[in-house]
Image 1 (cartoon, rainbow, N blue to C red):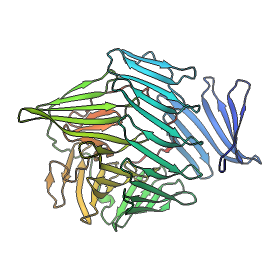
Image 2: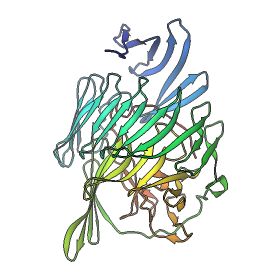
Image 3: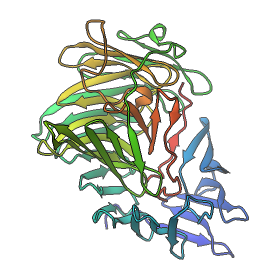
Image 4: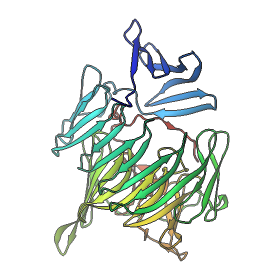
Length: 465
């Protein structure tokens, strides 16, 4: 069809892909003795070198160093293929693989976990079934392998649209509102938000990039002005400047704060993931998918000697990144959303806007990747300021300069831009719970379940501190 790109594959004597021709570009592959790709190079049809990449395999991470005319950039990839069986996994965890070493089933002896996975010809997951909860998730892709639509196991659907270069231009959320991405010839230039009624909400502009592709000058939403970043030669952010924030206002992480402890007892499933937390007169339950994405959170409380469900949330994910919540008790209301760019744009979580209970905020980050200030659009000023110790204990200061015990804006993303559960004070970090009072992670869930292609998009590894 019109616009399709033809790909021609050539194989070596061992049956491995030796080169791929895509239009006017040829990609060559080199392998090690374990059939792993260790180097690639791109040339045009005249043999001119476009780029080289060298892959090294370190523990559970693949590091890719790409050498181009602008210098060397290191990327981190989760996996190039399905994980191979590991006999040293958690006891009672069982896996089945197909002939291509793709994980097709995982279950535990205690019957708390049972997933099945189906793939397309590219090795991308297309159907995921949780046999315990009898829920199903699906993924569909375009002819270039871009994720078009994902139905999460919690029933929420997110849809993507791309340009001819594979760059996302639209993200449709479950409430039928949109996030639009406008690209220039090379870089992302603007993100703007459209409501479900087609109303324009706000825009964030990227005005200047450095040679490595980091947006060093940006214009914040709704008249909050410009923000600029200074980076050193190691791609570390060394300075942040705006009229609301400067480098001198970065908090000292060596300062410690007193955070009240909240008692709790937790239970885990067969993969070591917390599925239930008990507190006096309260029970909190969680569900997950096969990739340890936390999908639901429910809270029941004993009120007047009767147990009532007081909270039921479905979490939204843009590939591997949690971006918000749907309130299932409030007619599927989009309660929380963080609008993120497709590449690093700040020292934090790549978000340029937080939408919290119908209100829009511009987050500002400190040099350590925490949310430091929250600018309120409706008030036109700083709504809250967050200070953190090195271990994650926090102090919240409101608009009047007073310390408060909780976020009045109900902002869940603070320390390290990770979600904090206010009921327990636990911080949820990529499938693991961290207790800042104990200075310790509570669980180490199985890390072998990362999909081969769905979350494989390379991301620039800026060492942002």
